[in-house]
Length: 546
Image 1: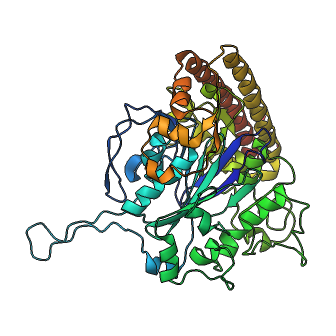
Image 2: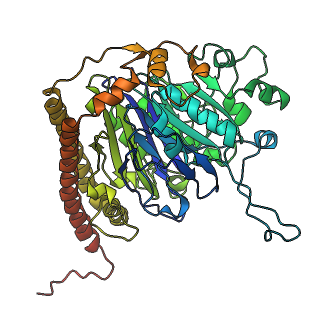
Image 3: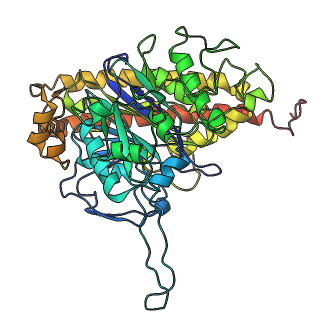
């Protein structure tokens, strides 16, 4: 899948939240209708079988409740993509990444192979299961992790055991940390903690550009990796550093710098960082420090100002506004306007912006901001994940086209708006601002209502103590020496704090109010763009028929 990710550390965000966000884009030539759902422990499988990989996995018997964004059509599997669990841990999976021939020669992908012949016949070969991938990750990881760090460890262990059939980037966050994991070949992986003061941009290209192996095999404060990564690198001559003292550059060792990257991937990182750091360097012209085709655009950097939810939506909706590369713009020419793959693209499935707010009680700490369809024409709305059920308008997406659910309404608006962009863009921008403002007002009012209920003292403990108190599925021997970073509460206490029926009723009512408002405003926008576009039809005539 083609996607775009941005990660925002807690000291880089406008309110001290950790924020992870990703566009899920469908493959070229197809749409994947999406749903927003809650998966309760009673609905989580104890035995999981993947559709694409034909892989069987036994899962733990104590899953947590979590949200997900699965496909409406399950013919290719669940594809849960993004969600938050009852311990207020968020996960986004996955950003499809690039690699190179040296990596795949050393550690090939684990591909499904169908059976050959019939049992009992000469030459019969049984089917061989494939590895795990985007279809599976959220379902087999998110219900069982109590911190972002644990998410890395659980997924890493699964990758080492089962392998994968694709290159993936996966984000985990809690109130204190964001971790980014990248797969390397079939069974290897690396993970890096996002600096608190930085944001990270990821455009379908293996992104980590500096990795401290000493930390990964020592204290693991900011780096983790598969158990044999050092030997894997050395045995296969993957480190391309000229000086042995240089830190490992995973982008050089494991990634790609192809011609197609310069059309498909690097321009997206260039635009996002150009927007968030407009004055730190020169972005345009012959003297630019970084151009759209630069291979050395940093993985992460400190923004020039704090990053808001609206900034995240803007960069993940962008089509190179204000540059010669904007397909809707007036700059450049027909060649430049179609040179690069835009971030806000026609085949977007959904965007989830997962925000964990450390200043709110655990029961209402998390928000999952959601958009459906092409981001240049849609809006972003907040929903509380700590509920038992989600609004029908976002949950009951069908495989047939209808304006009665949020997904297809957005698809229709985008198709109509694209056909008359300059005539509909003002109406779309007003819709985005009005619904966004409504979302912030609703969140503020709901937070105040929850706050009036009171709650337990949310004391701080170390991550190590938290993991041991919860008894999660990760190998505790692997994490005993992890740094004792501050964690908001013991994970078991977080789960207990979110298990409040009165609060969940308030949050569910807020979600429904947001959905009702969205439907009203989306229907109004659909009416507007339909009328405007219809008046531009080729068979119109300017003399009155009355």
